[in-house]
Length: 359
Image (cartoon, rainbow, N blue to C red; front, side, top):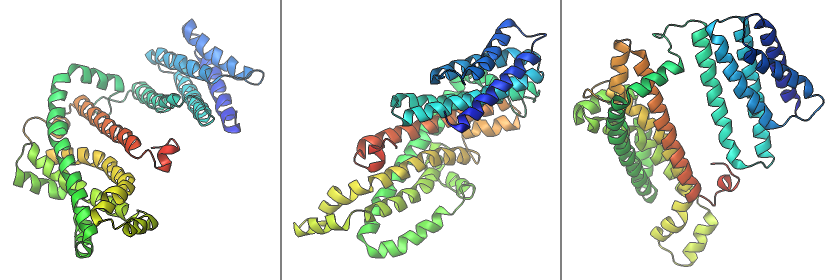
């Protein structure tokens, strides 16, 4: 263990001991056992080698203990929350170092999972412990309940915004940016004339162009797709042009000695070299497209859609539904980004970042 890991372990042990002592009069035996065992285990670290998985088990047990103390918030609850946070941090830190040292790469999925669960636990406990009204910030359990009870509504909104608007606008904008980038690369006139205009267009705020596009193309998904095309076009254009220019000069000269044409060099050398740049643009566009679609729905939409539901939910103080829509949008954006990253690893397997295990 490193010095920082020792600090985390000692801090978690002291906080667990404080929790056990503070909860002694009223807490159940299970809570006392969990936090007392964590405090004792922190002392045993100086004698025996502590396996990484044991920190994960103790973290899960302390999470249960924290929720057991929520019924009557006290000093013991906050010390338990600190102990759980420090122990989860220690587990993630040790697990990350084990993976870098050669442990199973699949264990890397545990790092974001534990980190995300820890954030949700902190959110839940702090909101409920401080008695924050739901109208300001509902706890994750309330948002989850809204997700489960509103699946039909959420699916209709997801279908309208993501499947119809985001996917179509993302595809049109990315393909248009790729095609124009090839034309720009082919023509020095377009490179000098079109790129500055594209740079100017990319600086236009979404809230400025969204109402215009919605008015031009209609209040259904077509208007949102038009906004997404405007937002996703320029990142693809700039990244593709940079990627095409990154191809090795030596390889290009060698292909010219074999009397290759421009299109042969483009397809066999320059486009493959540009693939990391193209996928970088696709990953950027996957999140920009969803943001643009939701913002566009604020300015006009049929009575369905994620942006429509968020704007009306805020007006009605239905904050649970607002957060449920935000959660669906975050999951959709993360899933699309992850899918593109997986495809990138398969296509650009030759790139040093992929060979080194990083996408």
